[in-house]
Length: 73
Image 1 (tube, rainbow, N blue to C red):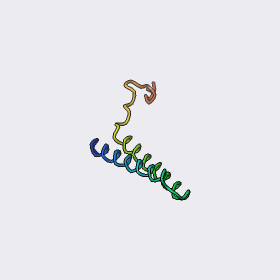
Image 2 (image 1 turned 30 degrees about the horizontal axis):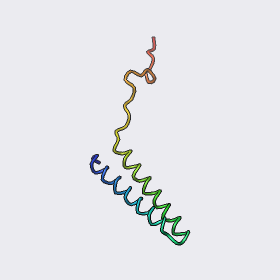
Image 3 (image 1 turned 90 degrees about the vertical axis):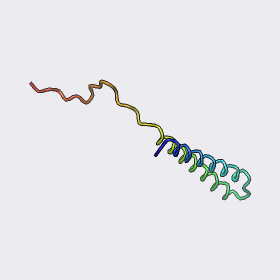
């Protein structure tokens, strides 16, 4: 997925999370409030996931000897 598309998806998820937070603040029923707050957390988790997909994985160490197989004499 391209960075622009991932950024678009993550910002859309954050806007949905913001809307859920506003609705939760105005909810009358405690059940509705807890559901909306759970939805908000889900949207934020999805946005975090999309942003982590946008970032490239870390590079391995340049000259690591951890995976070197010793030569048998």
